[in-house]
Structures are given as C-alpha cells and as structure tokens.
Image 1 (tube, protein in one colour):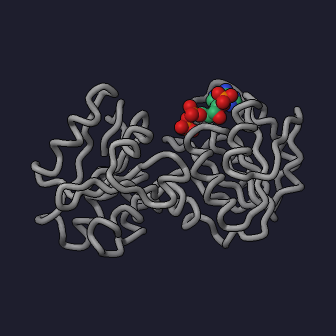
Image 2: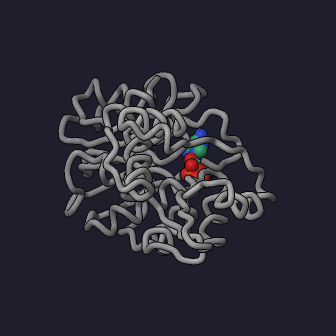
Amino acid sequence: MIGHPIAHSHSPAIHTAAFEALGLADEWSYEAIDVPPGEFSERVGELPSRGFVGANVTVPHKGAALALADTASDPAGEIGAANMLSFSRGTVAADNTDAPGFLAALPTSPAGARALVLGAGGAARAVVWALVREGATVEIWNRTAERAERLADELGAASLRVEAELPSREFELLVNCTSVGLDATGSDLGLLHLTAEEIGPDHVVVDLPYGATDTELARTARERGATVVDGFEVLVRQGAASFRIWTGVDPPLDVMRAAARR
Ligand code: ATR
C-alpha cells in the first residue's frame, strides 16, 4: 500500500489476516510504504525487483498510478484513477477496485435505483462511475456545486442537487463520499444538508468515511431503520478485489472484516 500519509492504513492488517487464514503467510506479505508525491514513479519502479507483484495506491497517488502504467483497465481509465497496480514481465498494469468494491458492498444491485451521491472528489468519482454503469439514476450534491456539475457532465450522471435540504425520500440509495463524519467538527447531517426525518427503512445508506466510532449519518440511518453499509465494508470489498487479482484466491471476507475493525 503506497500513500502519503499511510501510517493509519488498515489495509496491511486486512491482507495479512487473509494470508494467515489461508495458510499463505509464508509466501505472501503486504506492507505499507509512505511515499511523498515527488518520489512516486521512482519508488514504484523499484518494487518488482524487490519481489512485489503489485501495489495498492491511495491518496495522493491514484492519478499518478494511472499515468505511469503501461496498460489500464476500463474502470481505471474511465474513472481517471488507479488504486491498484500489478507488475508482470517488466510492465505495469493499472486497475481500479474502488468501483467494483463499492458495488460488491451493496446489498442488492443498484440497477434502476435512484441514487443521491454526496461529494465530488476522488471517492465520489469511482462511486458515480460504478452506479451509472450499473444503470442507476444518479444525482450529485456537493458543497462546491461546480465540482458536482463537472463530475455529472464527465460521467453522465443525471443532474445535480443544490437544495438547502436534500429530499432524501426521493432516493433509494444515499452515498456519502465526502470526508464529513471523519472528525466531530459539527453535525454530519447538517453539513450534508440531510435531515433525519427524511431517512427511513426503505433506504440503503452507504457512508464511506470510517473511524473508531460510527459517524452521525451511520448512527442516525440505523436508528431510522435504513440498511447501512459503512466505510469498513467498502474498504474490505475493495481489498478483497485486489487480493483476488494478485493471488487468484478468494479471500475470507469475515476474517478481513474483523481485521479492519480491530
Ligand atoms: P476524496 O478523494 O477522498 O474524495 P477530496 O477530493 O478531498 O477527497 O473530496 C472531499 C469531499 O468532501 C469533497 O466533495 C468536499 O467538498 P468540496 O468539493 O466542496 O470541497 C467534501 N467535504 C469536505 N469537507 C466538507 C464539509 N465540511 N462539508 C461538506 N462537504 C465537505
């Protein structure tokens, strides 16, 4: 796992637990490497000769990862970011498992659903791409409306919402792709223009920020009877997708989930 900063990444624990559970820990290992922006290409270039078959890539390197690869999967190319690299015979292949990881975390297919995506950064890009591709009707809200507009234009999302109070009831799927909820600086719901009364049992709420405690959004949605998918589940599903590509083995999801929360 390459990022900057990287010390708090849960991914080494998640992958290591899966290697151990499958009896692969003698053959495989997964580590976190802190690489500052200016050193990304050079440090990635050294990895194959050190025995690495691939790398996960996180903030701020996902664009650089796509740019340095020799080939890119459709999701990576269309999203414009890679969170995964594979090294084989002198070439580097880029992939994006954020999008399939998000889809795998959903309880049912989003085809035909109305989805409201909150946020317009890198995380939102992968989510909007995945939902549009699966046939959901996607609307985007973002604090900075122009970013939402650009994202909607680029990825073919339906339209964007700018209301002071978002009408959650009109949607089946709510996805928080902002960083709101990571620190308790205010009411998540207020910052996201949501109200508790608009959230109910028919909703699936996906809340990407994860930490030691539930966000206000996740807690409220649970209290209101919604199905809640938290950021740990999406992280695990994304990691599982990378694991499968590198090792060819299906990892034990429950082992990965327990490691993510530990
Ligand atoms: P990432 O790559 O993880 O998506 P990012 O590109 O920094 O990170 O995007 C963070 C998202 O959280 C953005 O949509 C940001 O809104 P802006 O585009 O207006 O900056 C959103 N965000 C961060 N802090 C926020 C806050 N206090 N209230 C509302 N939205 C916030």
